[in-house]
Image (cartoon, rainbow, N blue to C red; front, side, top):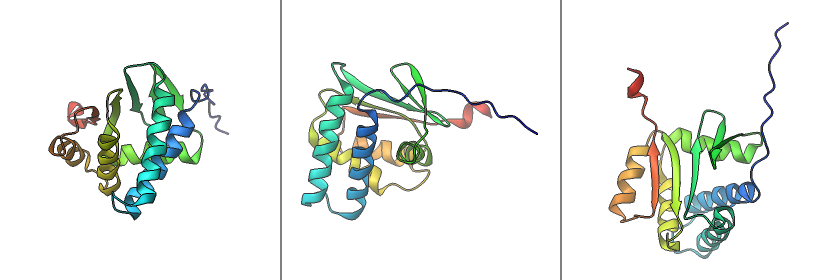
Length: 151
C-alpha cells in the first residue's frame, strides 16, 4: 500500500478566486464574441474590477504558474478547485510561466490581452508575446516557459 503525502496549502488570498473566475469568463466571452460585443465588454469590465481588488495597493499584479500551484506574493498556493485548475492549465498549455499586469494598464490593454489569450492555441505562448508587442500592449507582460535550459 502506497501512502501519498498530502501537502496542505494555504487558501488563495482574498479575491483571487473571484479574479480567476472573472478572467476565465472573459476568456470564454473572448472566444464567443467579437471585441466590441456588449457581453465581451461586460466580462472585461468585471475582470478589470476584480484585478483592482486583487492587486490592492501594489504597483502591479503578478502570478506565476507552477506545475500544480500558483505563485502569488512570493508564496505557492496549491490549485484545488476546477476553476483554478482551468486557469493554471490555460497558461501552462500556452507555455506561459508568469503574468504581470501593471497598475497603469488601461482597460483597452486588458481587453486586447484577453482577446489574444482567447484566440491562442496550445503552445503559442511566443505568438501571444509577439501579439502583445504588435498590439502595443506595454503594461501587461508574460514570461515564457523555457525548457531549453534542461538540454
